[in-house]
Length: 97
Image (cartoon, rainbow, N blue to C red; front, side):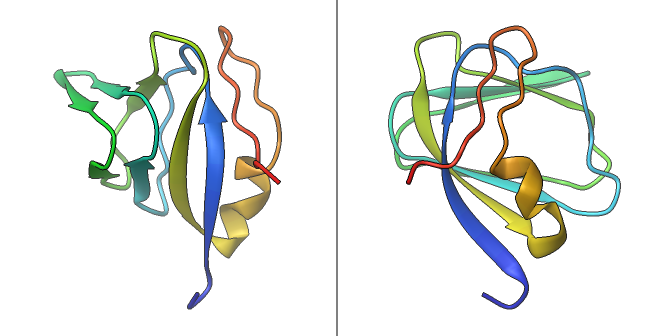
């Protein structure tokens, strides 16, 4: 939609500290819980909750439990990242077909 892709992904464990300098990142938790750590605090999301990480904000995405479902909204130029497996301390981000 309008050059954005909506992807349902599974997240497991912790990812690595990272940022997105050119775009915000949106998470909607569909199942389980998601914690997003920042250098100065954290946000805990439960099922049905949404959070937008502002562009340039350094973050660490973590489930702290088995794989959970999440909707990620990214510009089309970042769509490939959401559809590939990323292994970083047991983090899994992949499309659910």
